[in-house]
Amino acid sequence: MKSCKTRLLCTLIVLSLLTVAGCDKGSKSEEDPSYSVITKVEGPVSASIGQEIHIKVTLEGNNGCAVSGELHEIVAGDSRTITGKINYQGTVCPMIMVYMISDYSFKSTTPGIYQLKFLKRDGSYINHSVTVN
Image 1 (cartoon, rainbow, N blue to C red):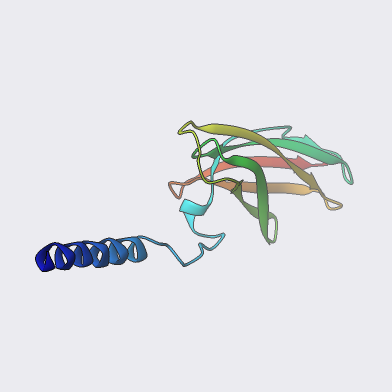
Image 2: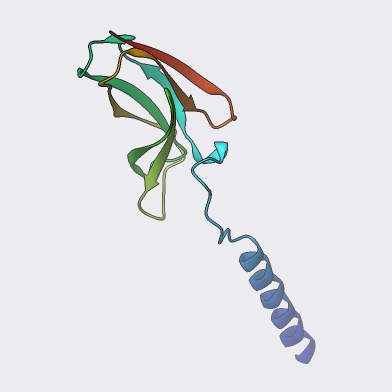
């Protein structure tokens, strides 16, 4: 009987340690490629000065609990780096890929060629140039 209790206690301790070790308590940075979930970009390549254009950005969620998407922008001169993030809600999620369209708005009051770099999960970029006249 004592051996059975000891074995059960050891099993519970090992399972507890595995559960704690498997938790990811750190948060990912927006510059971390695995944070970004952008898969496709579509939109105009030219605009007038002061004209706002809208670019459709497709985001990929890992499961059916994906409820919304966000875009984050980092500006450096005429270049912009855009990352995407999916927000999840729920705990029991169907294992399906979910695709969402998010709208990225761009407007410039200065003429020029603007490089929009949309960061993908693998660390590469989808480049989209916009010429403002």
